[in-house]
Length: 182
Image (tube, rainbow, N blue to C red):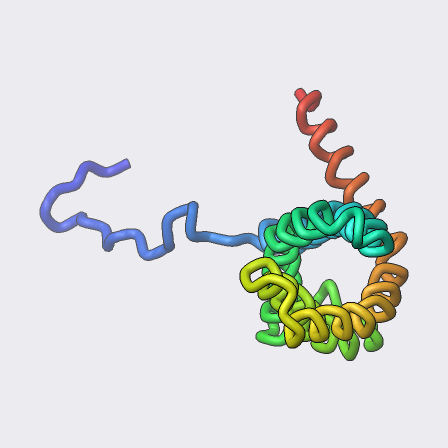
């Protein structure tokens, strides 16, 4: 290597720092990571939603539990909306790693916006009920949006019934494998 002396100076290195470079493999890992996050939060949501449905069947007795679980659903719902929204954004802005992964099935692409809006209305009206008490507009909106939401979430859940456990198992096995990798 030549010492820096006047006349043999090299131009400054133009490539970005390592932490700003993204290889195809890293981009692919981002897609996989997004899928695994979505699957994990979906499992959490499924458990909370099942408990929420059970409490709604016995609302006179379980209204406090229904309310608490409904509020607890907000965080995981925001994560799920964020991760699926990110996939939507990256796919439709033609990010190569997401395009290679492909779009969701057509039925889910059509169902997605309707499910999103119905979920926001149902959760929003539920929060409205928590804040204001059982006022008729919020109560009716909450009940009717839940009735519309139930078949939508059933179709959505059934469409992912195989994918979610596989993704979670893959995540856990890769984590365990990396712990014992020499």
